[in-house]
Length: 116
Length: 114
Image (cartoon, rainbow over all chains, first blue to last red; front, side, top):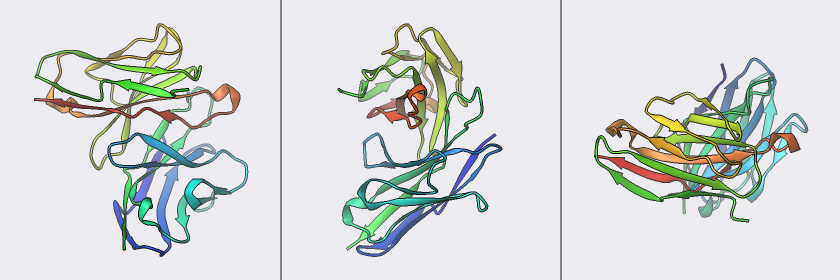
């Protein structure tokens, strides 16, 4: 069974500061990993994904994440926070083994607040 | 290309009533999923389908039913609504056969059962 742990249900940063949202996963096979963003009262939008190519993945809106197999981590970063980054962020893992049907297991989410 | 659409956006049900949440995608995706989102709990998989006529249970299927008669539509049926089914429901789709592994989400249906 897979699982995802997002450390910190709420992260607060100042505008212009580094954003670091942590995600650790548990999977018995090499996973696919995703970060989604959810703005208030909206659906989930894909930020970036790791599907066994480059371990440093760049996404939309200046976000990037690094897959570290030894640490079973996929932390999300952005060098300089913007007010528009305030949202809830979800890390998700997909089992790549046969028969998994690409189901996603989500973390509980991290609410990012950006202070002016 | 509208992507994944869901109706209704909001609904209030009384305990014991039934309803169907509609989900349609126009991307010709064969895989479709239903999730529920509760505050602080992330998203949990209710049911999924890998193609027309094929459905299977996810993590939290009790109290729900699904059908998949076409590639485009994947309705979720609530029978005998209970307060525990108060949640936000999201439909998603993907097409792994073309190397597309991320899921595309609809805008959600906010359901309150009182």
